[in-house]
Image (cartoon, rainbow, N blue to C red; front, side, top):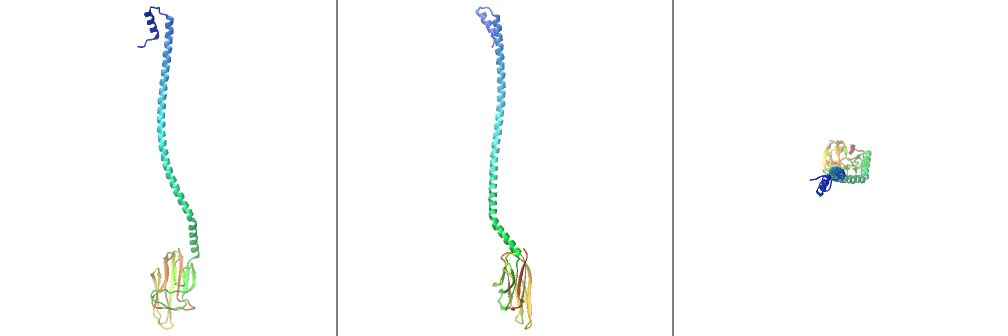
Length: 250
């Protein structure tokens, strides 16, 4: 039980037999009220301090949660940045590789454009008569035109220098009653078209041939072969037996 200080003083004085001092009671009463007010103010300050402390703890907890989220986001950002750096590194390596290939690609493009601007065309004829066996190549030994250097007079073979659509034409000549002659245009060993000539009388010249349009790839070979017969007529001054080819377009 908490009694006021003035009451305690009265009790002590009565117990001791001394008279009660009114002035002293008033002073104790004022002192007690002042102390009680100070304690009340202090309790209020403590309560407010505890309230502020609780709010600060809540703020700290919230800040910690935000810090955890920030750390998680930072870790995710680092992963994404590492992935982006890896992609960037690969793109840089690819770019450097392409840069190293630029000179050769440029040269290849220039060479291709040069060949296309120069074109491909040839015409050759036979200036002498020859006897041939089956599937033997007719070697047209007199060159009129050989743009692109695709035709070889030593082999009688045209080797395609660049891909594209080509037109080929050939004529073979037979004289007198030697026999019928059939020739064939062959691409990579595969016959495409044939031409035939069959004179009936002595001193009679007859021509036979054919024309074809073919798509070729670079390196394909085209030649005229003997298919049926054994003799091809040629003249020193007249190109009656001939072979022609031209690139129409890529």
